[in-house]
Length: 358
Ligand SMILES: CCCC(=O)SCCNC(=O)CCNC(=O)[C@H](O)C(C)(C)COP(=O)(O)OP(=O)(O)OC[C@H]1O[C@@H](n2cnc3c(N)ncnc32)[C@H](O)[C@@H]1OP(=O)(O)O
Image (tube, protein in one colour):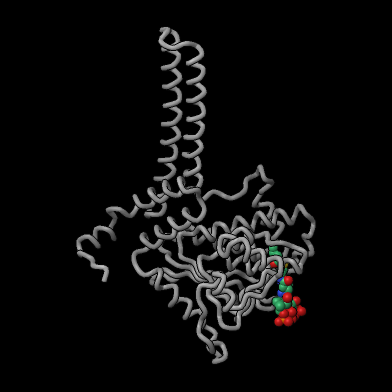
């Protein structure tokens, strides 16, 4: 079994052990109390009070052990209880064909390129493409050697959101909710991948396209590009998790300006409010070199992905848990990830090499 799979097994086993330990402690404490009550060491009132304390404490411990388990298991956002039936939704979405979501993984560099590919519709997401996106995310979840991911659109533009033809056909509230849960789930899983991810925004990122860009760790913009949450003009708000992520990226006031005003975010505004992390050099597409922006993005990303895969992936994991979990849980998750690199190959090599950080 590879290291990633082994780690997941370790987390699962550890989660079960923790839960068992908590149950065992609750039972032992209750039995002890019962014996003390029989022997007359404690009064009935004290025993009752202590039972309450044990129950509250036990509940807290169980909850926290289950919480770290579910985080490590990369569980879905929604379950059947929320009306989330992924296979049924996939079938519905596949009824709207067109376009593709392509994935290219490079073994030597550990970088992958995910391309939203529907140029005749400015890379709008057909239903079939939503299903393909989820499949590509699953592929990336099993790619244990990966370190970085670039998300881009084909033919010099990023993505114009969901395909309006599909949107019209599923405009009833039930189908809308299903699509919303499906895309939130896929994009949350994309954001949680143990890969440093960057959205390469060329041309336009509109509606769902702007939401997709926020599911990456970073956004690089070409000089003439625009990110625009156009949802207001469609009588909508983001539904692919874009609003929740936007608030975390730029703060609630900027987020409200971007959504309420459907503002066009050019690179200058993007950098100022912290939505963009870099602007690529001028001129490349005009030279007829379509791959130039991608090469620049690869070079930019490689600064953060140089080094052993297990260390880069661990860095992304601790950032993901820090980003999403309450502090106590995040610290516990960090401890677990730390345990996977401490005394590991890269750590021992660095110690033997007397590394200096000049
Ligand atoms: C929760 C998710 C919410 C959402 O994503 S709702 C969707 C939000 N997106 C939009 O409203 C974008 C609508 N499109 C536009 O505003 C413009 O097409 C856009 C992207 C600014 C490009 O404008 P232009 O450069 O003038 O090009 P154009 O309009 O002639 O477009 C070229 C072809 O692409 C098509 N297209 C663009 N965006 C699309 C979309 N989202 N769904 C379906 N088709 C779309 C457009 O209809 C046109 O096709 P055709 O040449 O007329 O056959």
